[in-house]
Image (tube, rainbow over all chains, first blue to last red; front, side, top):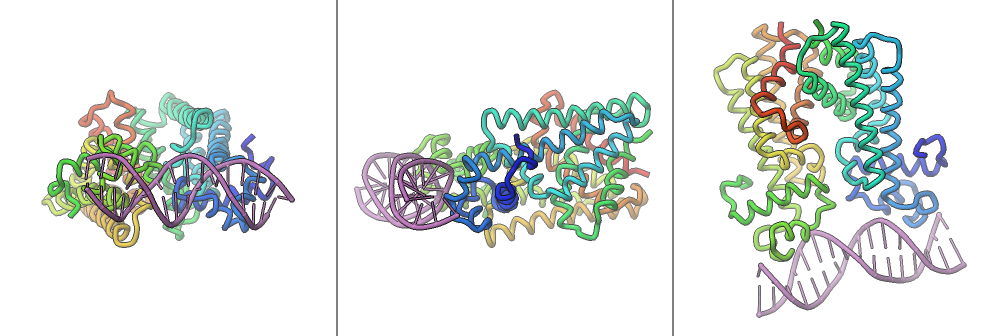
Length: 194
Length: 194
DNA sequence: CCTACCGATCGGTAGG
DNA sequence: CCTACCGATCGGTAGG
């Protein structure tokens, strides 16, 4: 399992430092020595907690991706109007970005270093997320709460914006998470409302 | 100079292959041997055309960044209404993304591998682009063509979407560039119109 | 443009 | 958790 619930505190600590370094320098440019230095041990000692460098990246990415999927599926399965589901999904994204900025930053580009089964699992998560979002969108259209515009482009636009929230939270500290939520909902949804 | 106008065809060829490989595997994970193989020479032969691996990344990123800045500044300095400038800027972004998808993909994450003066130059370009875009936005607000919403969030949202167009063009081939332009203008701007 | 080669660094292992 | 060490690969140089 990839859930942090079943990890030793030492492993959690390794993943946390690794995520920060991967964000700063990229996965390939970060050495195990770099990570070990942050943790406060020698590089070979990391192997008491991990099996490979790849495993570190895999654990970080699959853990955060599964968090996203389970949280959006919860919303999609709730008894709500489609438009309110979309609002909730945006709110969730802001909160996850706020709580895990380093891990989420890796979603943007570092997943290309996953291989074989790990890559497949990751891409499956991504598809599941997009599918859930598309469900909500279609429900909202059917319920006549948003305009009939190009579905692909509208969803692409919303998800593109959400994907970058993590980088924006640190840049503009004056926006707290609640303010940012409501502003994004306004910008992303109100233009689509009937 | 970084403009491709002053490069030998061999160097242009090296940069083109490098951009594609950097997109696929990342800058750090791409070796000079990988690039040389694509070009059809041995790795040391690249040094007849380049001075370092860093220079390849620098040339690619500064060239594409300067293309973006000069094109948006042209629009900003034109005699147009703000709202029409924004539409033109979106149209330009789609076209540049269509013509240079690999180079633009590096804007997202690989610029972190630039150093010192190169990094500064790159970030300056980025600031200049954002400044020009912000000018147009404020002009459109002043001319009462778009609503008074949070300026930072609105601009952030538009630029986030534009930044990802390159990845979307290859995924959905059924959209040609003209169609995509008008759809994006609708989605990104119409929600803001008064 | 090539072959031959360099020092440095990498992820990972052995053995305690 | 450490020290010692391994083969492989890296960016880059020498010399022609």
